[in-house]
Image 1 (tube, rainbow, N blue to C red):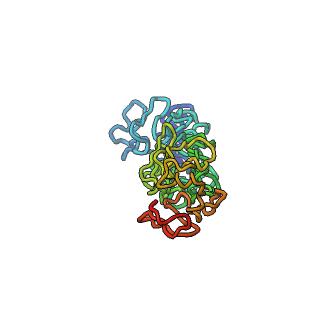
Image 2: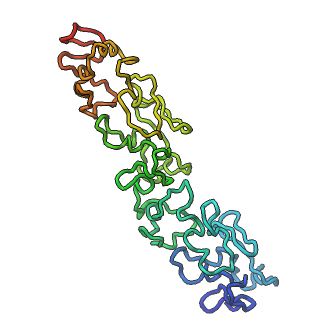
Length: 360
């Protein structure tokens, strides 16, 4: 500090030529980087940007040109550079992260280049979630605040995500306070016409006419937020249909599901459904009402005006109202007659009042 700095710090001011103003390149933002302990980043040291000599006369130190040599450390990242006016390095983010000042001017020391949003967006652009409570995923942050529990963990070359101290759960990135399923989706959309929202709630809301559908019916649900394949950067949900829909497909371009048991194995002619078209399903959405295309003697029985409840008495009543939602769309043929029995292995009815033993 005989040549630069003062009694508290080796860093300018003062510079080697005695300059004190931050508008001088030799002074600039030195103290903003290595001055008093910061509340929002780790304590920087001279070696982050310079080769610090072991001795005052070490080779390359006092070489006569009066200029400091810049040798960025590993945290500055590959390709870090200085153009005489501004820096480009990992410490200050990059444009792709949505920061407003990814190339800060060295001699601007007014705080405008070190606010949240200067190095990365607040929040960053997609595929980062739209939420702005950083503590949800970053355990080094205070809850609902842009302050740090541990400043030393910020700009240290690592991104601390989830783990001890993170406060978020499934609903922090998608869904609401009452449901982990959209809306909202990762982009903040709430309309059902957005693919990230679609018919999530129509499926997961408790129904009076079908079995309960869970997230695992269509997705692999991660045990933790950082489980492999969960937050993978493409901002798209991975679909893995359950055993009831083992051959099901999803067309992302058309936003339609295909080959679905849930939407067609009642033997309707189509088993596809639009994910983003709002609207209620009717009985005929999944199977016909006259028995056309359905198994066995459905058509014959319905033509004789035998109601669904005649053979499916545990599922539906004579008014065609589902009376046990858990038994509908559950992968089983729930056959229950008022009199007589049905053997699913032989497909034969017996002891019926309407006819003799018959094969369905």
